[in-house]
Amino acid sequence: NEKLSWKPQGGRVSSSNDLGYTWGLYELLLPNRKKVVGKYLNIWVRQKDGKWKVEVDIGSSNSK
Image 1 (cartoon, helix red, strand yellow):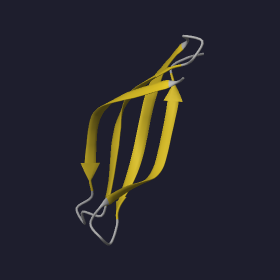
Image 2: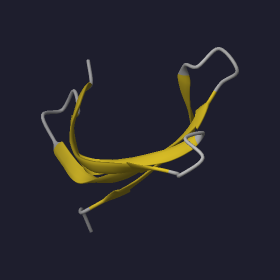
Image 3: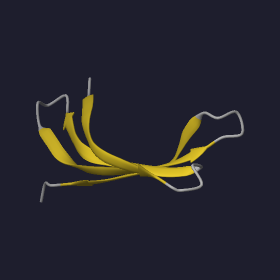
């Protein structure tokens, strides 16, 4: 099984309080014991019910 973990490093919310983003580091451990590490960015949108939903989830590995 793969195991994904992430560590948020920061985030911001728009002045209108309906859009935000978070960023950080992630680590993915693959079944063959290979480890992939990298950075991620999530863009969040506040829904009508007030809950936040991830609209965009992007990542970039540090592996070559």
